[in-house]
Image 1 (cartoon, protein in one colour):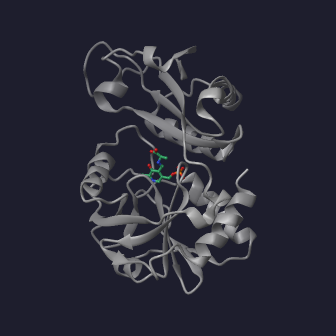
Image 2: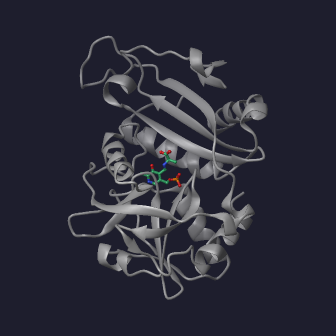
Length: 284
Ligand code: PDD
């Protein structure tokens, strides 16, 4: 596939950066993953807003305005369309840039490194909800840092949690804090359904403000399905009628087993189906 690196389009296999890039040495950067279907981008302005917030938090200059980012994304979608098909994610990455001394402290005048590439994502669930397989997830104490609201490329905490789940034969791991309250999963946000009411943990420093999460909440409100942002304990999650995970690559994915405990009747639930349709109507 064709990728983008520092103002240049080139084959992904030929993209190279300096080992002194602070993204490589320190994970010092911000990223986004943005989904698209048939060339239509989902949640573009919301993704841009979160990226701008992240760059500001890290004091990295935004190298492009929103139109600049949009044209990079559109070029990657168009030029890779033959190879990737109609369900495509775009990865955007801005690291602080190369610094020829290794120091935790950063120079203020570095040129950010910009990297982007496109990749296949699964087709939208909404085309065939009856074919969707529910996910099995583990439940684990959240051992990541206290700035999980920043979409940082420093993902070692998430990587270790995810790998542990994978080793246990699970698709994902749902995390809880020291108060046994659910934060999020390692690559997605968490929703539960209790007696028809949809609930998800409120935003704070313990979780990423997922764009899918935001669009799902808005689309549920649009369809008059009750949704609340409230603290959810691990115990409450284990007793919920439905559990879902949301992310740019998963959309809304039903969970059928948490830590070996069956969720509901062990099948994707009725509110999930409604939510999927509501989201599909709303997402563009
Ligand atoms: N993951 N929480 C975490 C820790 C995530 O990494 C992600 C996204 C989300 C969901 O955010 P959104 O709805 O904006 O995709 C929540 C991306 C897809 C990834 O790292 O590949």
